[in-house]
Image 1 (spheres, rainbow over the protein chains, first blue to last red):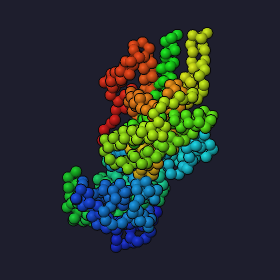
Image 2: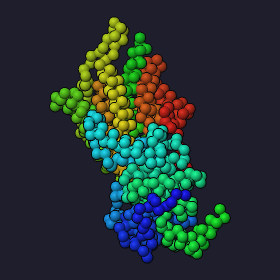
Image 3: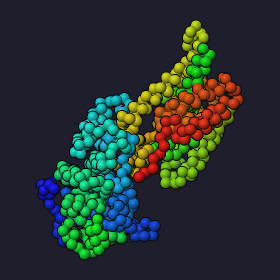
Length: 279
Length: 293
């Protein structure tokens, strides 16, 4: 394990309410809740994350973790509460606008554009920074060439973070599983987020792949200085990488704290970690 | 030599089907709907071109450009008014709306332009290239049609593969939700797809009516259905499939007319379609949709 502090320039603990929660938050959720089919899938979700923080969102299956991501990215519109992104209320935004405002995510079940090449997946996510119109594309005017070349360079640079630049022209669907997960992270990063949501990035990975992924997440965090929230069942990953952890069960937050505090929290052990011990 | 003559007219007819089929296949690929009003957009394009050229003395090519502009706009308006409100509706509702839109366009045309057939002036005159001492005659419109189809295919393929708009279209066709979460404006992309498809329909309308110069409000219906068949034949959702399907359908139709029976030609065409779909249910170049894991 590499030393953790090396990668985290400003160790903040703003996920913890008793410390400096108010200091420059990227995201603030106040009483966030949603009712899906008569069931309160998430309720009273109060959560704050600082500018350069890595937080973990854990909980048993069906606890509402992915629902929280869907609320943050406006796949679902919340029934109650507010989401402030960089101090701006995201009420009424759709998924595209929320992405432009700075949230990017990956998916639990990989949702790459499988028939597009690896680099085209990344460039697709850069759509908003290219401004040429259809006419200059058909006539291949200089601004078309300039912007496409710039996007291509940046896409290769992003891919190189994960050592994927030599797979650029392969169809995304034919990549091995681990590489597909990494490509999803690259694609999310290409949209220039200030908050990156990773939904089970290590799902289905073996321990050595998970260790690589952990290094990559730290590297991304160090390079881009962004906030990251990750949902993960792999406790070694969560405990090693996250500064703060939030535990959900049945749609409610049952605990918040540092990895050490969470590991010794009786409610968490009962709901979640107790069952994990046998594994 | 007669065989070659038939073959060339088959390719020419097939080129028209291919251009129309592109509209069906692109819209299906991205919006996952069958736009049965597409055939009637062809008819509107042909009428606009007809009036521009015969009544207002436009240069034929300017007439085609004007028709493209009108049809592009029409495509965007139809999508905005009729299909966009049904984005979340079951596909059957969208299908019925599309059929309704088709009748709406036909009847509006009937009201505006009456049912009297108009004689469409060819956009390029009625001359022909004589080859092999006159044994093989290729009319100018035939040559123009084949050329136009090739140019459209090449430009469209480059557009789809090399530009951000094309990539956004492909991304939307695979996963609209993920595309939108990556900052792509899905609604604008769907609008653009309708715009491109309808603009191409205007070209197809002008070419079709130059080759078969009777213009009526129902002119677009049968070629529309045939082109839809061509799109299914080649694998709906696939652009090379629309090209291949269109050309093959044209050739089969002309051969069936020439060597079997001109009355039975449509039956032969659809018979071949059934056989192809029995062997390859996704069409010639279509991919079987994979289940998401």
